[in-house]
Each structure stands twice: as C-alpha cells, then as structure tokens.
Length: 449
Image 1 (spheres, rainbow, N blue to C red):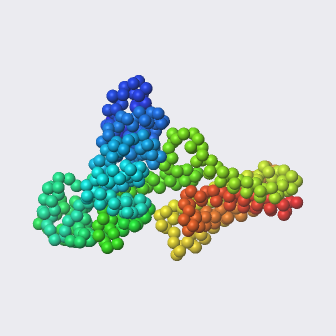
Image 2 (image 1 turned 30 degrees about the vertical axis):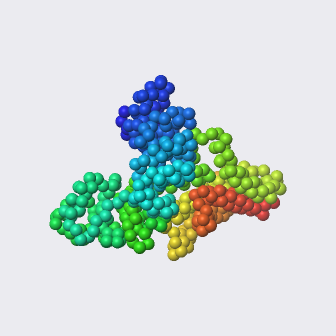
Image 3 (image 1 turned 60 degrees about the horizontal axis):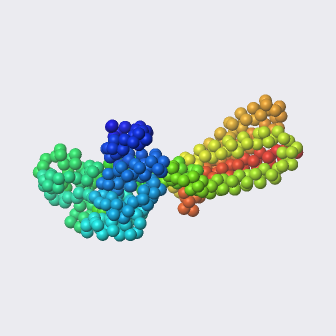
C-alpha cells in the first residue's frame, strides 16, 4: 500500500480490513502513513471506528497525529487517554508542535509534560507559548542554526558535519552577532558553491528581512507570498533571533484561513467534528439559524407595511423576490472582494474612497443593465409597463445599495473587531432584503395605488 495513495482510498481499505477482522493488516497500513494522513483518516471515520483506529496508532506517532487533527477531534482523543499515555505521546516532539498541543492538554498533564523536558526545551517551549498562536512568534520553530559572520565557509561546513543534521526545511543559516542580533542569511546553495575560504560576511545575503515576533499570521502569509520565501527568521524587539518560520507553517495558516472563511460564512467553526453527536451539532447550528430567522422576520415586517398594496395588486407578490435576490448576489460579490482585500492588506485610508466609488459605479452599471432586461421581460410577461418600470427602478436602487453595503459592512465589522467572514453575510442579507422589498413595494405604493 503506497502511503501517498489518496485518503479516500485509505479510508475504504481500512474499513474493509476492520470489517473483515484483519486487524494486523490494518495496523501495519495505518502506521505506514504520514501523521497528517492518519489525522485525516481519523476525521473521516465515525466515532466508534475512530476509537478502533486510534488504538492501532504507534504510541511514538500519537503526539504528531494529535497536532494534525482538528481541535474537537483532538479533544475527544485526549479524553480517552491516560496521563502516562499523554506524557509519552509528547516525548520527542518538535517544540513548535508541542506548543500547539499543550494548550489542549489537562492542566495536570501539562505540568508533567513540562517537568519531563530538559532545561533547554523547557525554555524554548515557554518562549513560543509567550506569543499569541496567531502571530509569528506562535508559528515559529525555535530549532535554528546560526553562525558568526567572521568565519569561513569551511568552518561552517565542518560545524554542520559535526552536528550530523540540520532542522527540516532549512534553506539558509542565520548569521548573527555575538549577542544573537540578526545580521543576514547564508543560503545553503551559496555554502555549497562558493570557495570554502570565503568569509561568511562576504557571501551572506542581507536582503532577507526578518519578521518581528508579534507580526500577525496573515501578515506573515503576505510576506511569504510576495517575497517568495521558503523560510524567514523571527526576531524580538531588540532584533535578536528567536526562531524561524518555514513555508510549511505558512501553508497551514493558509489552509486554516480558507476553512475559516468557508465555514464562518454559515456560522460554523472549521474545527467542528463532522461525526459529532447529533444534539451537539444541532445546538451549534441552531444559534445561526436563530439569527437568520430574526433577519427574516425583519424583512417580513417591511413587507407587512405594504400588505394593502399587495392585496390590491397581487401580481407584485410574484415579482417581489427578484429584487432582493439580485441585490443579495451583487452585495455578496462586493463583500467577498472587500473581505479578501482586508485580509491581504490592500485597503487603506488612501485608497478606500476610490474603491468605494468603483464599487458604486459597478452597482450602477449592473443595476441599469439588468433593470432594462427585467423591465422588458416583465412587460412582455404581464403587459404592464408601469410594473416593469417600478421593478427596474427598484433593481437599480438595491444593486447600488448592495455594492456600497458590501464595501462598508466588512470594514465596519473589522473596526468593531468582529470577523467579517462570520457576520458579514447575515448583515448584508438583511440590508439587501429590507432595501429590496422597501424599494419595490414602496415605489409600487407610490405609483400604482
């Protein structure tokens, strides 16, 4: 069985072997996979099968697997493990991975884990835990290789050979002063291709700018994306090297942000367990359904204000959903674009007004274009040019409002420290529904009654 085979195939094969009672074969297969693949398998199995699979995992791999699984799945696995098993699972883990795990361990277990570490690893772990997990300091790996600028490349090569290994993902060695202040980076490619007698100072690069430890994770992603980095040093306020971030850490952040945007749009947590108990899942979703119900009642209250108009001209009820629906789509387009721009740091005080004008013009052009189409279609369908004109005018109004709302809402939520990906869609839907119904029925009441 190739460990690189798609997870879906692994799930089916393991289920087949579990159902047929071939436990030894299933165990061999599970422990031949990468910890991240085992984590995806655990997340893909119902609770009963998940427990069986977890018992098959080699204890030496358990810590690495726990780091990879979703938070809720991890909590369930940890609850079923004894203190000794949890402490054993953390042995030999990388400090940055251990920092991700200890936050979810029971307090008593955390204390035992800390006591089991040697002095150096204990200090490194405390260093990582001192920073927010969504910052460069929380993302960094403290296992780094540093050299002085006043030695030759031959000395560096002998040092690396004596060490016997270098940290995974190392593409450069950080050059520091005697007090560990960052000076530059010595790329391994230069170490291998330059004269061994060259000094580090003459070969190192000073173009690789370090990342301050308090830098938010989304800014770290931006740095890696725009500077095509494979790794970068992390420094404190005094420019001393604390650790490094590698591109695999950044990929994890990108994946988490994508899942958060997808799940947050409907009020869910990306860490939710797909196989959580029915009541637990229903309770979580009920809150968001309640919020949406409240906004639906608000829109219904607006429609209720025009019930006399609807009673007199029943035809309006047939056309009524069109305007808020088109506004919702147009507003969502603006909302997604602006939310993404905020995440990428593309909006600031200097260009905000220009972006708003652009979104308004897009709303006007789309509003006029689709208003003409809808008006013509309505006239051909019902033979009343007045209703066609009213729905066209309402369409223009709502698309312009939707475009501006799609710009204003995420910026306002961001300023209020509310995640636009989580709350923006509900607020936008409320605005486009209320304005859409009010514009259409209000114009109808003015010109048809």
